[in-house]
Image (cartoon, rainbow, N blue to C red; front, side, top):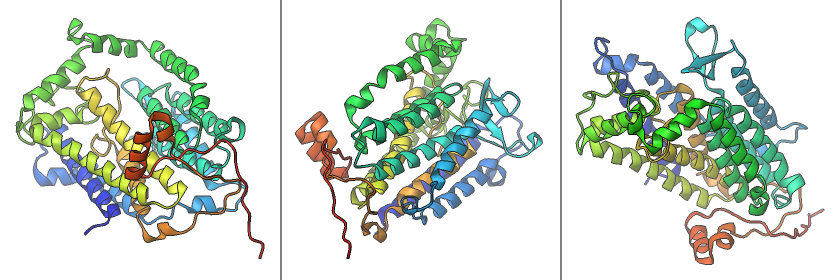
Length: 422
């Protein structure tokens, strides 16, 4: 019987394999001369998939708890956070970043003639999960306070989202939502976070209002047929692509909408191509793989013995789950159009490699070494209790705690601990 961590890795392999095939199929053009297995193996996303698998296998053998045991003056994670934010800022400098469809979200790797680039916001997305989990674990005795508990990570989260929202509203919203949920699970008070809601809403409204195309997306969502050849073209073509698939689909590689009808067919709207070529069966397969990944990941979090592992696993699963949910909602025109990728399926080397590496960290938590004691806290600790039971009802909290073992809530008054001196 495979372990939970092995099931996570097998699910990632299945998603990467399916993503490589459907991206290759969606990228076909008339007269391209690429066909068959030979063309698939020469496709660059085959290389990205191999690198993603290597990254996952490497991180699945990494002991992430070493971040908590460092005795250096500056934790190396702090330097990683600063570097990630600096790369995002560098991508905004004219002439430094790579602009695609009017958005400067990429940085070149090497000379521009190579054509290699990466997306710094993807790095920030996963670094923030690790940083917030580390902070909440180290300061778990004071997370119920504002100044020395909640405020520092909240400021860091605001800076990261503020830099990214200039060019990518969807990723910024995802990072903010996952960060807030992780802080709540780490012991932050809901009423304290509610004080920051007006500023967050104002930032989102400002980000939408400063870009006319974002306003057009909202109006097109309300009535795409008012401008079927303009702002409503994308959602209309997405619905048409899904509808043409039917139950069984046209067959892999036999889709029609990818030939100039559906924009962004290999990236944000790859799920529509899956529905057209593989039909309802393909859609159910994709959704089923994500559900298996999340279900098994939650079982790993439930059995994890330390706070840092639980918070890290929760942040990774929230990021993957919410990103997949938002993408599926956009493709099916449940929410306004937004450029956000489908994890491990949409074309993109940075996203594939970093997402696979993050899920490898979740798989690494499923080890016998998880039973080790937690590191000695540097702050007064206190017994924990489930926040969800207090927030949404006793029955809900009891059910969630038994099923997933997450999250926690810290009482208001800290208690001291005694350290042995012998």
